Image (cartoon, rainbow, N blue to C red; front, side, top):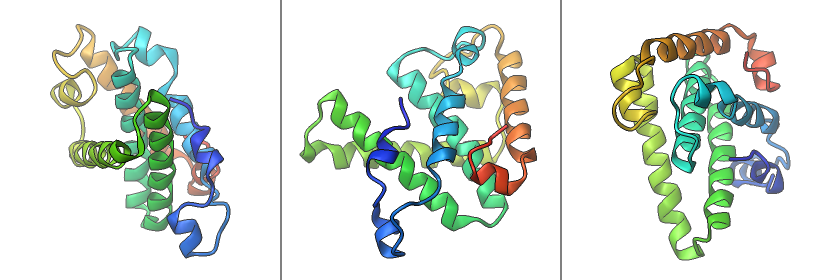
Length: 171
């Protein structure tokens, strides 16, 4: 996963609707992807270093940021960040080789998955939740250490001043 697709097409639906060419959240989305790609999530905490595993980790970090924005009452920014994610996923799906007729269904499925993850993570996360959403099966032997590390990530995201978060500083 790379955050370049969101910068390749800056004029999304909301940008056109509100007359903005730059949604201002490219740095935040890039920070989400950068955090999700940190090697320790894969090497130390059992996240599979596969397309699915990388998607799951991006979805998790994105969900944590979206939940923070939700708690702050920043729905517009949450929607714009989600649009950056959709734009990136659209580009990723096309890069894999899916054609125009399939991309919309794939993106719709991705958004359904992210919506489910938001609901799951809104309730908190534990080894059982992460087993379903991150490891897609049996949690690794060090699942509690992974839960602690992810809880720490959530606390860091929640502790960043809002202006800094929106500027792309997530921890």
